[in-house]
Length: 161
Image (cartoon, rainbow, N blue to C red; front, side, top):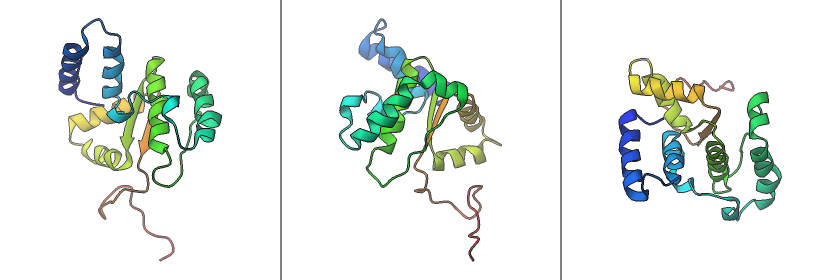
């Protein structure tokens, strides 16, 4: 979640750009607050050109059942090589959730780790963590790409050594 100052500045700029009565203002602000990458705010099913079968069979089906997924705690785990569409699929689902009035939150594992550590002494990081915990849908991206310092909470010793 972005700070209140960041959200106010973004809202003002968006209203100046689109006009106060434009319905896209609320959607853009919700995507901004949810930290969804701006590149994916307008993503639609027509933009999917890779892994289309998976998109139609899994992602579109999940999107149609967002309320049920939330009620029963159904989640998705995206696994694959770089460039196969994991971030796009996550962002698509989050933007669809926002359009349907749900709350959403996007973060990377590296950012989450930093927020957890800072949350003990930094009010802004604590607010972001609270927003994540209270969100209907959360996406944690870039798992496996992080580089942690030895004192990291998420670093665990290799059991083989």
